[in-house]
Amino acid sequence: MARSRRLLVMLTGLAASTILLAETGMTAQAGSSQNYLNELSGGVAAILDPGATNTTEILNATAKALNLDLTSVQEQSTLVMANVQNALNVRSEASEDSEKVGKLYKDCGGTILERKDGWTKLQSGNIIGWAKDEYLLFDEEAKALANDVGKMIATINTETLRVRTEPNTEASTHGLLPKGEIVEVLENREDGWVCIDYEGKDGYVSSEFVLLDFQIDSGETMEEIAAREAAEQEAKRHVNYGEYTTDADTKMLLAALIQCEAGGEGYEGQLAVGAVVMNRVRSGAYPDSIHGVIYASGQFTPAMTGKLNSVYESGNISSSCIQAAEDAIAGVSNVGDLTHFRRNNGREGLVIGNHVFY
Image (cartoon, rainbow, N blue to C red; front, side, top):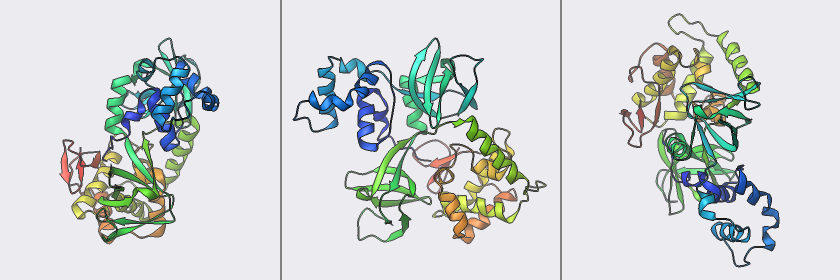
């Protein structure tokens, strides 16, 4: 899907961490000087220039009061990204003999807590543990990967929000979003409107009623992995694999995902999303069930945010999305054996509607 770049600059250095905390409420931990600043934040008011009114001024005043070289602090990055094809073990101590506490998957990232002897202590989601540096990316390499795979999301912060077809209050509406709904941001405009992905179509919501955040996929703790695998095993009991025939509930789950990802697209765009899921089911690199593929960590935003479950339970799924699910399960594919898609932002691949498949 399309990846916003607007907040990526926030991911580097102490200045970035401070801005990120101030604007999004995210938490981050860093080493050395950054930790010192964070720990002293409660007493900074007594030190700061009373005229400091924004994050940059506060940061500069704090650095000056602590006699720190802000330029050198800013060069330190707290971002770390996994550099693996499948998964990386995260351990309780900086040793390969220590207990595994979780896993980081391809394209997952986290925050550096400490580094020593070729190991990095990091936090990613609910994981806190150590990983070997040879399987991680830092600094510019980490930022480049995050820029490619990260995304801006918006959380609806009002009871019901209209999604407009154009960035003005006179435009018609695509639909309504409830409070707490999470959607992907395509562009944070300067005119007070945010362009979002609404079922594969461009939609516009007022920035006044959303909370913006930059998001990178996180790993899973061993407990989270066990719970997910148990759910996948339960789902498999209801699947008859033959020619990938399956039960009505699983078909409707795939149709609900297609509705979430491409409900506003034509049939070809909807079929393409279903085909990607089925290509993953057939691939040895992914879980071998529709349920497992859809709910795999960090793969489909609607599954992670709960929107998929809401659409599935409501039954509000178009007939074309149901037909696309049926055809994809039957083996029809208009994307060959491709296994990924995102909003079309110029990336090379097969373009169908508003998505590029690769």
